[in-house]
Image 1: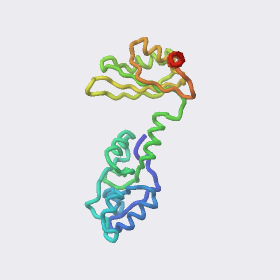
Image 2: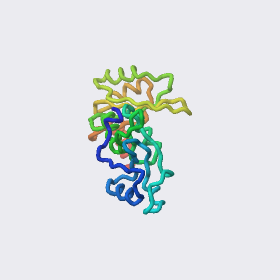
Image 3: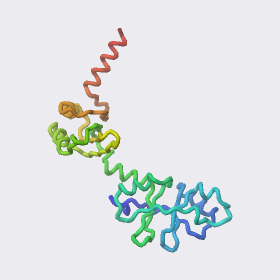
Image 4: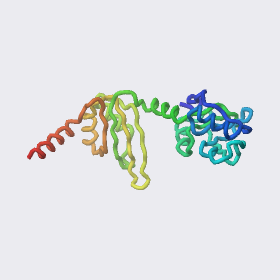
Length: 218
């Protein structure tokens, strides 16, 4: 998904000649704590509510408060999320190559796009693994999942630079992950955690609970 596909048309604009009071009122009405500043179609910056609150409400929005975070129309969703994570603003302007303002993305619209990409609304199970870098193979992980009549819906990797261990988050299309977990552990994969929906419980965990209850009764 590209940045231009996440633009919210209802995000209002501020202009360089606008008063601080007008800016604050516009923010309050929009429900956003930061808004883009556009001068005759050209993007010039973003200002945050807390910065305006420090200024004289009768004065003009000062350039010293402007920052210029932005992404291009063709930027990928990951670039959008990375930019939003770096700034305290709840919107991110989208611009053309010549810095013309196209629109803005909100944190909410970016989260919706991430949820769509990760298929968070679909049923299934999530398995988290720790794998030494030299042992990682997406092909093997997929094979182990598919050997149990499941499909890999999503696979995300996060390397730990300090330990050299790769943390993998694997989403499969089956709610009962027990067969897949057994296969992974049989091939010496370290399962850190897993999440199964709609009350499906791994029988090994169920057995441990029964053993604990038995111990407590004693």
